[in-house]
Amino acid sequence: MANDEFDALEREVVDHVFELYPPSAVGLGLHAYDGRLPLSDRSATDRWLSEAAHFEARLKKVGTENLSEDRQIDRLLLELLLAGPRFDLAEVQEFDRNPMVYLASLSMTSYIAREYAPVPKRVEGIVRLLEAIPAYLEGGRRRLRAVLPKPFVSLAISMAQGLPSHFAEAEDFARRESPALGDRVAAARTQAEAGIQTLLEDLQTRRLPKASDAFALGPELYQRLLYVREGIERPFAEIEKAGRADLERNQRRLEQIARESGKTIPQLLEHLNVDHPVAAELIPTARSLVEGARRFVEEHALATIPEGARVRVEETPAWGRSLSTASMESPGPFETSSDEGIYYVTPVDPAWTPAQQEEWLRSLNREMLANITAHEVYPGHYLQFLHLRRAKGSLARKVYLSPSFVEGWAHYSEQLVIEEGFGAPAVDAEVAQLHDALLRDCRLLSSIGLHTAGWSVARATELIEKEAHFEHHPAEREAIRGTYNPEYFCYTLGKLAILDVRAKVLRTQFGGSLRGFHDTLLDFGCPPLGLLERLMARAAA
Image (cartoon, rainbow, N blue to C red; front, side, top):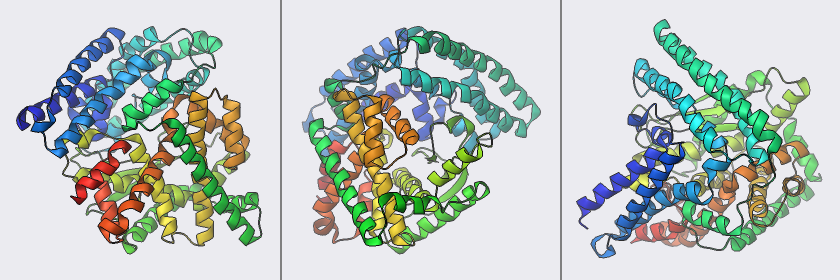
């Protein structure tokens, strides 16, 4: 196959993937997909699967002798781009068992937050999306099984209850431009919220009373998940062993700090918790930490920060607060408006009791918030996506986002800055980093236990309480997350992969230059972990 023919096939495959899930394209900055929702009706997804099989067959016929090494890698990325959705639809049947699949696509944040077009143009996308919601949710409701996993139903109910307030934010955004635009969004909201209410009532009255504890993928599908998301064929038992070793390593270091300080581990953590901003200071504190993290990356030559980097810190939108402590809205690789990132931090809820508000602020103590900032902003997600925007890779490399590379880099960033002396006092910063690392280790072990070894939520909760030093309620929340998101193994899995390749090449290929190594790594895009060593070898050739 000639290069131009492969180029055309590459575009066709990417377009086909985005036909199934247009919000992914919007998040990457492809605004031709604005206002479109994923496929939800079974007949539509069956057609998608049939066409995906044809694309897979065409990719397999491409002879490697006519492709460069880089394009051979791209062909594998295209195969994985198709294999992931096919796994979700046909093998796990996620669209039939998880109502959260449908609700997770209804965010208006990309339209509200990014100034990629004049407001009236962005409102057009909002209105089209809102108007499509009733039919979209009805297609999902019809195909959902009568008996669903209880955690999936409970969290879907919480998500559905939060969406009307998010739609109100979209209306306020439009109304600030003109009353007429606000009225258009208001009319579309009425239809959308009626569709949400129908689904909500169905979940509350029909699905929740019948819900079961059957959520596990099972060993075979779990192993398959590792391949379709990360190109990994390594047995999950080996990954579990590596995760447990990392847990033990982090535990030993935390115990050493406790001995040297003359404190117990609970006392170390309590020392962090009491030093937190008050509610009104939370966002200003986060802004200050962003600037401090940026200076640290520059002064220690950890990675190149491209010109135009700018981060806005805001409160998490209301609809996402039940699922997020903090998050990063990074500009996608095709976004043309600006390089600005939006760092969302979840505030206290005024409706909470004073005790609940204090508990939330303790979890966002200054050292923990600094650790989160390293993860989300510098040198974590935001810097990662700035490099992705400037990378010269192919279309396939621009659109393939490996969960374990994305989250692994951000988690690795937390450890990296501690290694380089971030934080004052440094021991407190390291305690916060270790506390988060232990949680990520427990996520990996819980994921494997819950989905391959018959673990209950209670058993995973106990692991997180004991090994990550969490109190019962947040530990249980983390355990429940593992039931519907087995991929939360991605933090530790990705971090360990990056540390492994760093150990192999930092001295021999980069002369010990962290900036050289990190810039090269980030220029790969967000590749599946199974390709990491191949890409690094290619970069050194």
